[in-house]
Amino acid sequence: METNVNYTIVGIFVIALTSAIVMSIIWLSSGFSFDQFKTYEVDMQESVNGLSIDSPVEYNGVEVGSVKSVEIDHQNPQLVELLLSIKSETPVSQGTVATLATRGVTGITYISLKDKGENLAPLQKQQGQKYPIIPTAPSLFVRLDTALSRASENLHKLTEDINALLSQENLESIRLTLANLSRITGNMAANSKQIDAILRNSAKLSGQLTPLIQSSTNTMRILEVQTLPATYRMLSNLDATTRSLAETAAELKENPSIIIRGVNRNNYGPGEQR
Image (cartoon, rainbow, N blue to C red; front, side, top):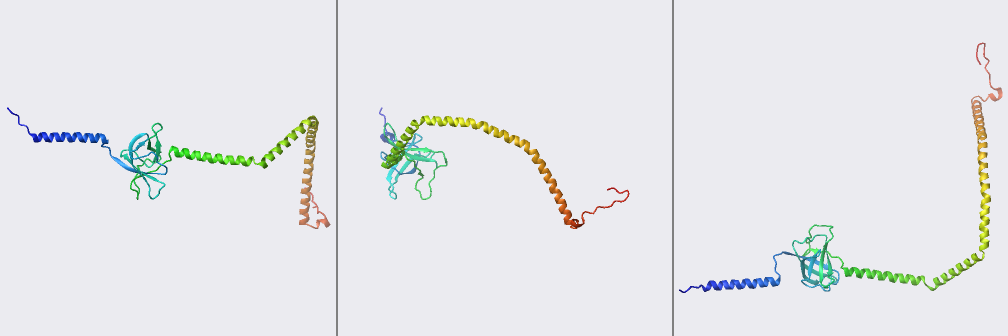
């Protein structure tokens, strides 16, 4: 008994299987994935030597995308315009900065994204921008070059200052100063005995003056104790005299005839008290 075979179905099955195999091979070789990507722009102000299309983009050390385009900005030739294809779920915020980095062992150049944590709001495209622009930070090589340049400038300035300090005039002044110091030291050494004698005499004079100072202090205290009561009494008498003169002046003002007639004394009658 012969089996009836539908060659059309077999042909369709073979074609479908072959297409599936080819699509699987293409998918696996090209790295297709179901991840969604978003494009960002980065404007580098330094050389991007070693960076190329498909170079990795890492966020805190995790690969999140790749470089899509590397071109010179025609409006500003000092800038290099990079387009980055980054996974949509990557938390690119307004505090994210892009830095050009290089692996120490392999030497592969890539874009490193880091978030400073200042503003966690998602980075959005601004008016007039084709893509959201991620700000940049100087790479390690740029920072080292800047630091070395500053160190070189400071060293050059220090060298100039040292040369100015060690000029012929300053060296001559230093030589004269050292000679004078040597001469003064020699004189002091030659007159050391006289200096010692002066110091001893000063010490003796200080010892002699100390009792005199103490005696003067005691004398002042004695005078203070003896003089103050007498002075107080004198001031009291002077105050009483001043009051008497004031009363007399007041009476003269009210009755000037007192100077001629004198003070009238009332004659008291019998039984009246004076």
